[in-house]
Image (cartoon, rainbow, N blue to C red; front, side):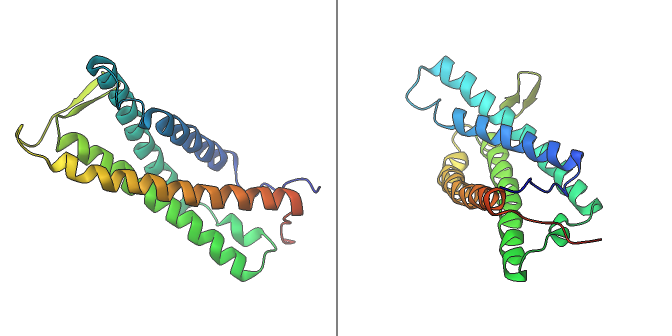
Amino acid sequence: MRPPVHPYGTRSRLLHWGSVALVVVLFIYSGQFIDTPTAEADERRMLHSSYGMLLLALMVVRIWWRTRTADPLDSYTLPNLQKFFARCVHYSLYTLLLVQCILGVLILVLGDGGSFFGLLDLPSLTDASSDLDEALMPAHAALAKAMLVLIGAHVLAAIGHLIFGVTEAAR
């Protein structure tokens, strides 16, 4: 097995692994407020929402950082088709993560409101009879499943690169 090549800088890797950690936490909390007592469910929902808002902020920083740095894929000696699919997966993941986080915030503010780790309250923007938040929940759940497929493709590609090796082009 060849040693991995890391054309991604330290900041990029920290942003990546921070996002991974938050996505894992979000998936852990995602189903834990269903079929639980109300007070406990509210606490878990608040944590899920708070980590989602944290991920939204991290993704904004990550995208900003990505626009400021060279594309590491350009340094790999990969076939152009493989680079194309890698970019498709990356851009799709970024898009789905952003849309998912924005949907989550909309679900909060179009529902009962929410809280960011109990430190900052997000008020409801609708009256109590509105079901707009419930209308967005199926899309939020469907995007989570789509993300799992893309994450699986991303992880399989990373494992493939570790096993078969990827080299940087000579500079």
